[in-house]
Length: 276
Image (cartoon, rainbow, N blue to C red; front, side):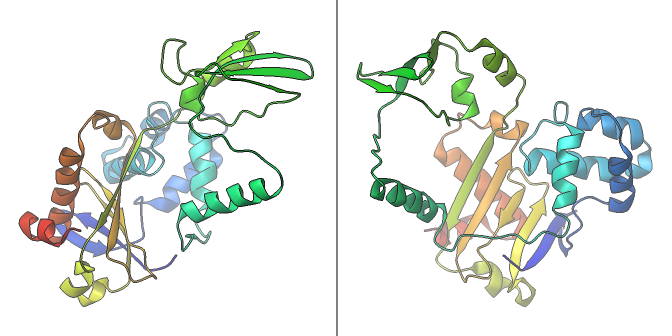
C-alpha cells in the first residue's frame, strides 16, 4: 500500500503521518520501560504534564481505534513491540481481498484429501490420550486421534449456556484460566462504495489519499490506493465500538456518513445520493 496520510483536526484536513505528537519523547520512554503496566498508567506516570495533553489523547485514540484495546487494560509492552516495529515496516494489501486467501487454503486442503463441514457447530469434545470424540449441536459424532482447536477467543470464553460454547470432558482448567487473562477488543468495520471517488474530484491533493485519522465518531478511514476505487473503509474500534455493537445498519450508516461529511465538509444528502 502507498499514498498520503491526513489528519482531521479542528475542522481542517492536514497532511501528516505523525500519529502521536512528541513521538521521539514518547518512544524514548517506551524503550526505557523496565516493567510492564497498562498504557493509561504509563501515560499518567510519564506524560501527565499539560504540555503532553495532545500526546496522551493521540496515544489513547491510537490504542483504542487502531488496536481496539482498552487503554486501562492494554499492555504497554505489547503496544511497544507493535508500534515500534511498524515505524518503517511496509504495509501490504491482497488485491483480490482476504476471500482469495481463504479460497486458496480451502482448495489446497480439499485437493490433499481434507473434508470440510460447514454449519456444523461443535458442542462437546471428549478426549483422552490418542483419542478424541467430537459431538456437534446436531448430535453427530466424529472420532480422531488428535484435534487442533483454532476457534476465536470469545467463543472459547463463552459460558456453557451461551450459543456456540464448547464443553471439554475432562475439563482443561489451566487453559481456560489462562484464556480469561487474554483480552480481545471490539471492532466495527464499515465499507462504503460510492459511484465515484469523490475525494479526488474535490481536491487535486487527495489524488493519492490513503489514510485519514480523525476525532469523528468513526475516526479512521482508508482508500484502496494505489488501486483506483470508489470504496472507503471505516474503522471503529475499542470501547467505543462496544457501545455500537447492537446498533442497526441504518444507525451505523448514518454515523459513518456524518463522519465523512464532517471530514470533507460535504452535505450528508449529497453523500447518500452517491452511495451505492
